[in-house]
Image 1 (cartoon, rainbow, N blue to C red):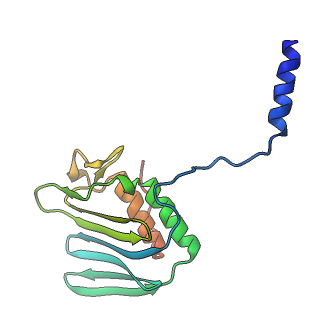
Image 2: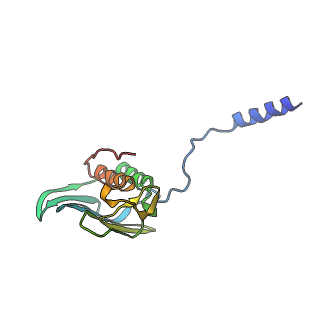
Image 3: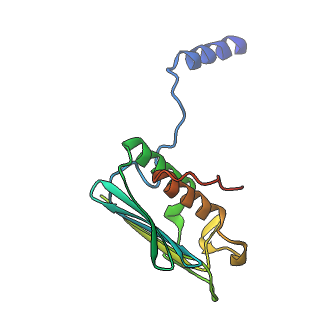
Length: 167
């Protein structure tokens, strides 16, 4: 009798439509960016990415001298991948400010979507892997994995494919 019950349950399970498993509620839904500004300054070399209308402006300067200025038009797929990467880096958990005394790199991330705003910046400090709301224990070790994932996503969005972040 128990065996017949198990067979019935299995038959019911196998008759259900199969669906791919997915995350139901990602922190940043695929959405249009209304404003986007990213900047990273390390040893006088400044890289910035700024949204202007439907275009992205990628600019690199060194000690005030412009080295590169490119206008790009990412596709919807490029934007979708960028948002997925923001979620992978857990950007939505980052604090508004990271600071560690001394000289070192600085960065800023500022964007608006239809239903939310986000701003985070750092000086000589990056979000800590596994606890992104706090700064990493040793800022001298350089950018953290969450920041590397974010930066890789930003550079991929503008067609500059950096090396993948080490885990």
